[in-house]
Each structure stands twice: as C-alpha cells, then as structure tokens.
Length: 267
Image (cartoon, rainbow, N blue to C red; front, side, top):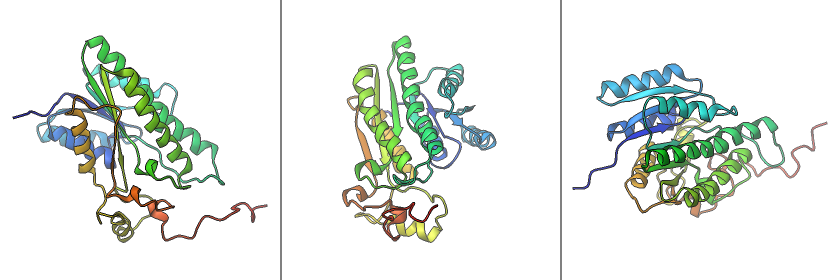
C-alpha cells in the first residue's frame, strides 16, 4: 500500500477561511504545519492549539507579505522551526476594482501579496531544498477566473494570471529539485456581503451543480505532492464553471452590465 507523503508545510494566510481549513486537513494527514498569519495572531494560536489537541504538530508565524521584506521574514521564521518540504501560497488580498475604475493602492497591495510574495517564497524554498540535497513542492492557490476572464476584480485577477504564468516558469527553472503547481478553485466560501442564500445560489451555478469546498483544494494539494512526475500544472476545481464563460464574476451574474462610462457622472 502506498503511503502518502508527509513533512513540514508552510501555509500562508493559514489562520482564517480556506487557509485554516487547509492547515487542519494537512495536519490530519500527518503534516507538520507552519501557520502564517498577517494580523490574526489569536486565530493562528487557536488553530495551533486545535491541531496539537488532535495529536498534530503546528506553529504560528506572523509576517506582512505586503512589505518588501515580509516574505523573507515569514520563511526565515518558518525555517527557524525546522526544514520545510512544501509551501502552499494561500494568502491573498481581494478588493474590488475594474478596468475603468482602478485604484493604485489596491493594485500595489495585490501585486505584493498575491504575486511577489509567492514568487519570493518559492525562490527561497528552492535554495533551501538545494542546500539540503532534498526535494520540495510549491502549490499556488490561484482562481478559476484565470480560465474565463471577466472585468471584475481587475487587480486581483491580474495578479492571479501573473501567478499562473510564474507557476509554469518556476516549474521549468526549479526542476528537478522543486516541483511547482497550482490549484484554481471557484467560489468556495461566503465572500464579502453575500448572504447564505446568495452563496448557495452562486455556489451551484455550474455544470455539476456544486462548487468547490476547502477539502477539494486540500485533496488537490495532496495529489500534487504525491505525484512525483507532476510539475507546472494547474488544476481547476469549480464544478465546470470556467467552461461556460459567464462574462461576469459569479457574484455579479444577476447584476446589470458594467456601465460604458463609469466616470460620466463624476465631476
């Protein structure tokens, strides 16, 4: 019987939401989990305690990935706790803008957290596994929107498209020592001001009639880790939604089309 790979994993954005679920899932499968958080120290420590109470091993590591030195501080803290075998880049900022109404602050933060930080963390893990004469894996959490672009969440989606390209480029350069892949989930948890009823409606708006959940993402991560011939691939988990080309983000499918000139009434 094949045994699943285990080791130590750093999960960015691990204290809350999808990241939290991934930490619990990986710990349940025998991984030592390094939980990264930005502001949610209490939530991260609570999660560590929960993992330890279930017989797992975990530690919490704070750091702001939006700052120039943030990614290095995060991985330095994680490596101080021991070697790393896997990084799951889950941390992400998600603020609304669109091509005719851009915001420099939204764009700059999205670039730093969603693109530059995963690239730097992967680079650091590559040199770490080289020095250990070992192997490793990076899994970048992307978005199913990379397969069917809409004008919504312009800065966010631009960074996810960039990270998808970087995933393949890093996979080429870091082979054979470090494998790099991506998971592109669709709508997974209630977001923003969605009501539970709106989420249930939107979550099922796809050919399968069911959307992604955090356990689907965790299974995809483990599949990538457990498949030693796999690198440079992106797995989309969205019930088939990205095949249908919705034209708008799933949260806005019932809204009116974007205005032709959103600034026409602004003086």
